[in-house]
Each structure stands twice: as C-alpha cells, then as structure tokens.
Length: 354
Image (cartoon, rainbow, N blue to C red; front, side, top):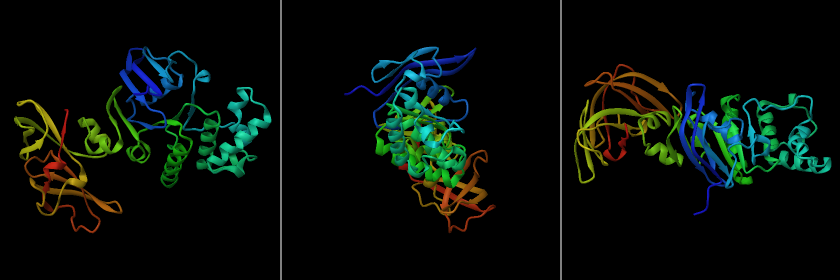
C-alpha cells in the first residue's frame, strides 16, 4: 500500500495551558477532497494551520510527500492556503494577484502571465486578467484566490472556510465549482468548515472533530449513515437519540432498555453497559406505526416547512424529555398539537459508542 500524501502523526497543541489538539493522527491520500468538520473550538482550524506551517505543534509530526515538514515554514512547504477573506492585493490587477506566488519564486514575467491566464481560465475568469479585485463580485474574488493558490501547483491546497462570506445561493454554486475544479486539477484539497451540508456536498473524506480530537472519519455517506459516536450522529446531520442500558447481547443482537421500551438491534456491546441509539429524521415514520419497531405516541410541538419536506419535532408521551426529529413529506397534514404514532425499522437504528 502506498504512503499517504499527508501523514499527521500524534499531533497535540496547546495555547498556554489550553489544549486545542489532543493526539490527532490523520492520513490524507493524493487527489482526495478532505473536509475538517466541527464546531467552533473543535481544533479544525488549528490543525489546518499546523498543516500549512503557520503553527508548529507542541507534540507530534507532520509529513508531506514522505518529508518531515513539522518545522518547515509556509513558504517552503508544498502547500498553499485560501483564506476566508481571500487576502487579495487591492492595488494589483487580478493577473498580478494570481501570479504573485510565481513572482516570489523568481519566475519571469512572460511565464507568470501565461500561467496566471491559464489558472484564471481554469476557474472561469479568463476575461478578468486586467481587472482590479474591487471590480469583481465576492464569488469571483473567491475564484481569484483559488487560482492564485493553484497556479504554483501545490501538493495540497488548504481552504479555511472559503465560502463562509458568501450568500446561500452563491455558496452552493461555489461548492459545485470547487468540486469540479478539484477533480479537474487532481490536487488534494483540505477544507475547513462547520457547515454539515457543505461537508456532504464536497468531501470524499470527511473528518468530524470535537474538543481537539477526531470523533469520526471516512466517506461522508458512511459517516452519515453509520456514525461512530453520539457527537458524530448529532453534528453530521440530526438524529433522535435514545439513551439506554444493554439488557442482553447474544448472537450479534443487542437488546437495549430505553424510555420507549426494549429495542433490539444488530451489533455488539457488553450487557449492563450504557449505550445510545440514533435514528435519522428520514427513518422515523409518523402518522401511523408502519415501521417494525413501535416507539410510542408523541405530541407534535413544531412543524417547519422546508421546501421538499417538513421538519417535525415531537415529544414522546412516555418521556417528554425525548424529542423525536422527523422528516415528513411536504404534503403531510401533520401540525403542532397533533398526537401521532412514531415507529421505525430496526435496520435503520444506529448503535453508538456513547
């Protein structure tokens, strides 16, 4: 098996007495689109800064292309970073901005200009070469920053919440463009965000971070469908969480005592242990108990129309502290105040490490 492009080994970091990264190890493959996903304070931006050379870790090593880059400064690493504010030089033309990194490398003017034009064409801005940054929209400036980063042909492109300043429509458009550009150039992208939808739209390798650690990682489809921890199940999308105690574990079937009764699911866990079960909103069945596991009655507290579906919040009649989060069809007649039966299918219940 070939070595990873990036190999982060047992990295920890402290700001004073505050530990922001705690023994993080991560491998990033060539040509991959990796998303570092997590809430504020999870350590994702610090990890990106360590990868880019802007921060030297308190402990651990960072290898890129097999070389120890732990103490190598940003300008000497095979990485470039696109920041949220784009950091374009306002007095320079777009072409000069894109060619700036090549200028710092001593590349001659004619070659710089040709490479800058090619990079701008790659991001769909061939006609903007002679314009100034203030003449462009936010989305266009973001693409100029991307072209500037790509023109020096880095092994790894680092993106620090690059779409955070854009409105929703433009952000979704740029998600599509980022993914297409990444596939076209084949450069490994490492992208920091707290936006779960952005992560699922872009990543082929999703890394969920919490409190300085990696909670879960893998293809976004797996992380969503079968999250490994309670945090991953509630941050990478929403889930109804049923806490319980294992009463029996035999032949790959675990029976859990919960507030809505015993539930049996496939998995392994020691009897007597505390455990959590997760159910994604699209797997909860409302109106009538059509699933093979009945979860009891619930009173609807809120219904939010979200275009293609309705998001329904309902409190369990057996345990009002238990909130069901469900997706109902947009045409569903359910409304606040209704009492409904809730069920699901056993195959859709996720057994979590709690």
